Length: 116
Length: 114
Image (tube, rainbow over all chains, first blue to last red; front, side, top):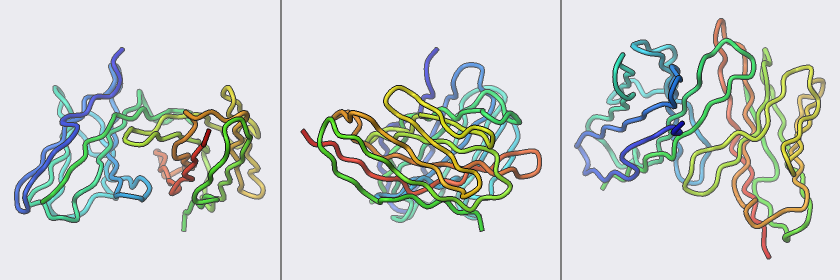
């Protein structure tokens, strides 16, 4: 059973370009979470999705950022018109279900975005 | 306000020594508390998870404790190894309606030196 997969692992963009980050959850997992980690800082929750639904996007900036988890295919975190402050590591996690007290999130290796 | 605070911010120990990391939280209503290990350049990996009724949980050389009354948790690492060098993150889960919201600490950066 492959773990959570993210691609690309490294992404370089110039200011104003778009960044698309992909996350394939573990097999059998239908819940996906995106986090951002700035250098020397802790993880910050961005968004929680189930298949075709956004459950909680309270941590996502209102502008330029969007996320989706379609019925088929990976979850996508999209950043439009990137700025230097978007440079960070973006981690995706998945879990099999929620509502249970001990559900664990399994993390991918992250995508490191560098905005020039 | 829901918060998780960890101490120390960073720690250096010699290989073979024990150490204890602290986590204080103000999260309500409390659901569970987890400790994650994050190696440099990698995603976090779950070490332990404890609910309200559990006050200790072990995973190999890692032992976590939870005092729900004082809202404190500790992670004890026994006989440290070089591979223990990582960031250790305390994460508290709060009930939010039908969902649970994770509140992440900033982590303790541990360096184990030979």
